Length: 242
Image (tube, rainbow, N blue to C red; front, side):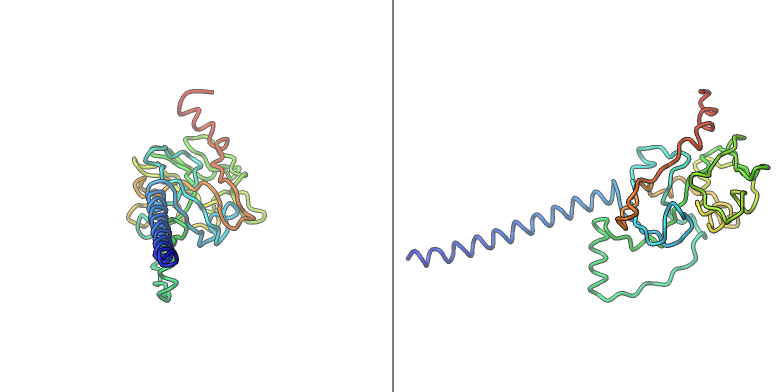
């Protein structure tokens, strides 16, 4: 009698254990989905336009609270949706069902980014209303007539001092941004999208969020700096402080 009672009891314990595991999995999946949807998500870097700050195939964590709750500032490294015409059409990636399913599941929780090729990542140089000009006699770019020392993050070819191969003079429209890659001679950014519908300006509404950290590979783990000192004089002139 005792043995016959133990068998159903063990079976019930196993079923309860499986049920609890499923509940934990579903709750974890839901929490991860909510975090990915509203707080942070992962992207990988498909090109060298942000070298040496970001390398090809780096993975980054993006804070999606910016710009909804946290204002965008000059120097931020921003992920944004293509305003139209910046990216060439991408061939559809063919995956077997198992890999595709795993990739979808990881994308739900923010650990995979199958849509990285549909987004761009650049550094914010100009905010709405800013007057951005390049280059002065020293090869520097200026924002609102204040020259910038961008040596901390800009990558230039050997022997080159101009921070942009081509000169430009623009005033940023309302609700738009002027975006440039750190690898200045190898970045198809705002300078080279003037023939698109948006004239090279990125609507603030296209911003997905600010890149916070390089999360992979582990050897390159690092917080991403927005270099406030580079733009400090611009902000001081804006607020009338010293």
